[in-house]
Image (cartoon, rainbow, N blue to C red; front, side, top):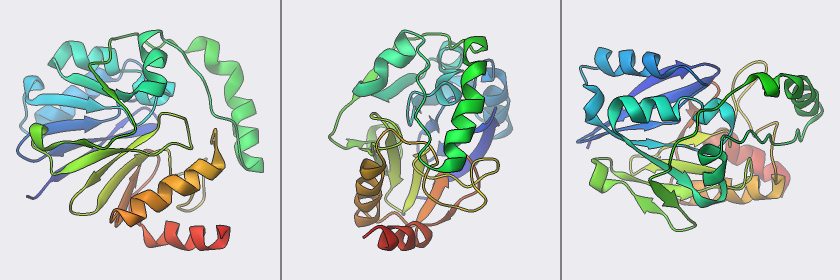
Length: 228
C-alpha cells in the first residue's frame, strides 16, 4: 500500500499527515496551530472528519500544543504513551536536559520562556505501552513502537515500507543541529541508543524527524558504530 506523506509545520515542530486507506497525523505542534493543520487537510482534499488518529511522539509542548484544538475540530482520537499522558491531560510542560554543550545552552535559553506557553489540556484516548501498536485498523500499514530516550514516553511510527517518524529521537534542523543526528536534548542518552537499534533492527530506512528534513537511516547507523 502506498502512503502519501504531507509535511505540515505547526510552529517549530514538523508534523506529518499520512494517508493510506485511512488518515493519521503525527504530532500536533505548538499551541494555536490547529487551523493550519485543517487547511493542510483541505489542501489534500480531505475533510476534518477523515482524520481518525493523532499520534503524539512525545509530550513536549511543541508537539502537543494543538492536540486539544485538532481533536475538537476533527473528532480524531489521541494516542500517547502512558509515561506522558499526564503531561497533556494536566497541561504540564517538562523539558529534557541538554546532552551536548550546545543542547545545554539551548535548554538554558528556552527555560525562561516556558511560563509564557499554555498547552490546552485534553483527554488521551489510546494509552500506549511497551508493546507495539499496529495501525492496520486505521488504514496504515505500520506500527507504533516505544522508543524512549529523548523522553520516557517517546514513540515512533514505523511503516512496513521502512519510513520511520521518530519525533525528537533525531534532529536535522538549525538551531538544533547542523546535520542529521542524535538529539541534543535527552532524558536518557543510553536509551536513545537502544531505541535506535530497535528501529534499525525493525527495518527503518528513511527517517522523518520532527525538526528537519528526512534522511537515510544509514547516517544514524554510522553514529551508533561510534558509540560501540
